Image (cartoon, rainbow, N blue to C red; front, side, top):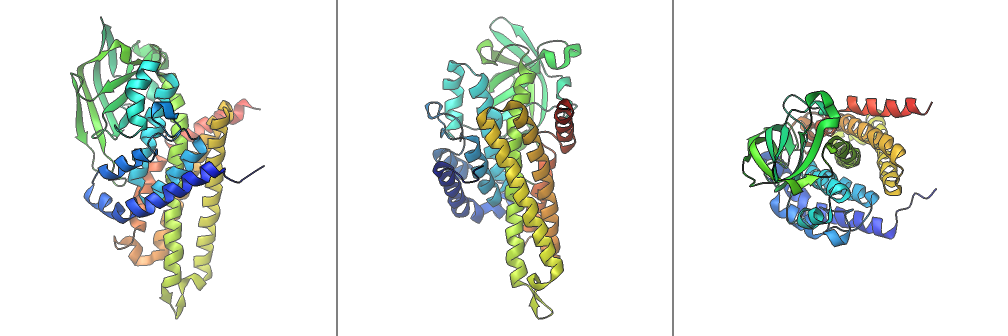
Length: 384
């Protein structure tokens, strides 16, 4: 068993780290405080290949593997979880399904600009009344001649304000068909009958937009059907299985940032005439943080490795485990980080309060941790 990264993987990690430290970290607090979308940063990331890491070069991507993607996502999220989720959604939730299920024309028209960072994408599955129960969605698509007519609303859509291309899931069958009656569509901003609704004010990841989408007799050309009709739920589940690696890596980046800030502070903060890093209570917290972060990293990298190898069943289980564990590690780590910083940790003078706010969403989106436990349990029970 070889735990060493390939030269290409290590080069990707180093490049992402240097970019994050130079271009993202200095403005991360401002992005959060002012809720500013980091447009210039995202454009530069596209030029570096970070918006389509595992998409082949012929379709505008960097042509790397999922392990490289996980390494890059961790480094970017360590600097800013807001930038990290923008990157994760474009890679995992938009480029990946377009490459897997799109035809050559769709790949050329939509995947190339997305993977190269010329345009930003969004994934629209969740609705006001349907989150975890994705099979119950009510947004409807009716075929009329050369178009599908979409009606309904989507909720909590990451990148909703800035995205130009959306993968939208709508019901083409009956409500009783549940997951068997859902299709996926490629929708462009500017299509008649489509508009972006309310933008959410959020606890964390405040530099990424989260919006409502409104479809009122939205006309979508029939050639914009992704995959085949009524195959949408399969596409959504395939997409979210991969997305969990990205969110796991995002959570890992947050945890790593909080840990490093805590080590640094513990060496500088003096109480009772010695650095607090000398006290066993602090040392034990740091030891737990370091151990759990390393365990989370191994789970994420194994899930990424299995995805690259095409080990579908194991990869689905591991990606859920990675997302579940890494997100909970991020929460535990950021709570301890605030405790180590004491009163200062509760202020905006130090970044750990931002890490804490950013960490919480990783337990919720792209499948709540309760859903992850269901996914894991089903696969565990299936093997016995």
